[in-house]
Length: 301
Image (tube, rainbow, N blue to C red; front, side, top):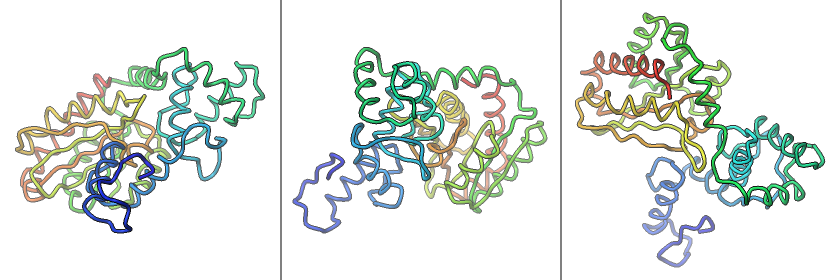
């Protein structure tokens, strides 16, 4: 495979067990749901993995340019102190602004386009720094400046119909505590992220059902960037949610799920099940999540 995940068998045009295993390995490496199925999210990730920094000019465009080359650009700019935002592989306004600031400081033509000249200068300067970005530092500072209580904090709770009862009880409790709550149900994944960004919510919380007895909690993380707020909230949920669900422990992990990648705030996705247990423990689960959010706003990072 072009992405570097070799098949154990010769390329033969068949999607066999070897291909499925390679797809699963690729999904795991990209922080995607691992199922061995090359669905739309996996296919998009495969296309993005084909781009290396320097293969093409990078600039602000509609639709926005995406790829591993963009992520590498964001990482290099961030390591030099130019805040390109999260290392999400999406060339948005923050990345364009960082390229422009880098060009201005480097005596280059200032056009916010990462072309051959900008790339050469960036490569020379990047060799002298460590791969750590300023984006996480600034996100942590923003979290620390926020109010330390739920009152007027804007929280989006996203679910699907089988989780609507839990989501509804959670939203009622949060509103009672003074939070501003936006609730969406059965929305496509990227529409949820876009709405959260449009509303500029403080927290995005996704609730999805698992068929088995499990509790999986994910926050956004990729090479060079870990969401400090998402990691902290996921850790708190991982400590408290299993007891309410009646499971032994939670799997807490940094991932690049599309909804976590596209949201611009603390975002966490919870996969809990089985549905029968969730319905039977609806109130304890909702109260546990509300308590986790209250604990998180008191110490968000």
